[in-house]
Length: 100
Image (cartoon, rainbow, N blue to C red; front, side):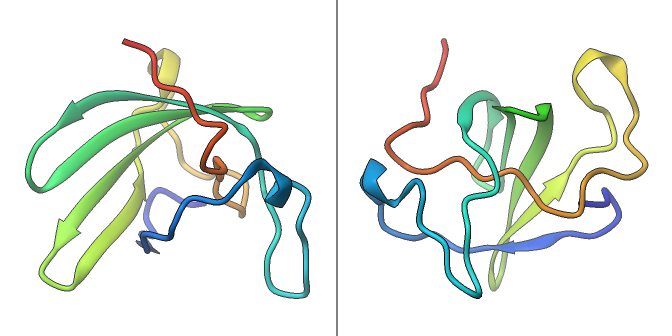
């Protein structure tokens, strides 16, 4: 995911862990891990996904038409992101954990 390209974020119902290995022609689980929230306002949630490929910091941004997923330029460890893997990290519901 390139930090210059936002993605549509759509809320879906939680799925059981038996969906963890589900794949078809259009869908697969890209990654597993846990998430850590850093900041939240009415219009934005800033968080890090910790997956197999390492941590990636994202922002969910509320628009008039829904939510956008944005890979932030400033990444964990002070690294500035210019390009990241083409597949965004996904954390299946039920396996995500928050840390306070």
